[in-house]
Length: 74
Image 1: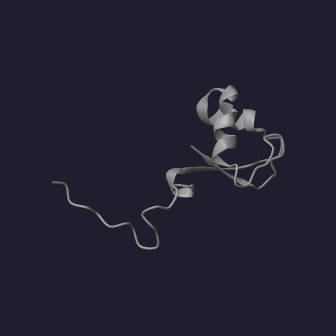
Image 2: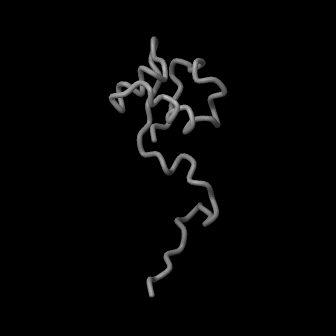
């Protein structure tokens, strides 16, 4: 039987994997769009909805990102 490992200090076992599930972050630069970011990190701009979904806690519209904003890249 596998040994049960307790959760890391400061976390709860039922916590959503929010930011910790994403190991890559991207800081928005002037002229960036989610399409452009997806093209850069995935090689395919049409995957921009994945970035939007991962950042819905801070983004309400995929067309309204701000310079300096940090986005999670799943």
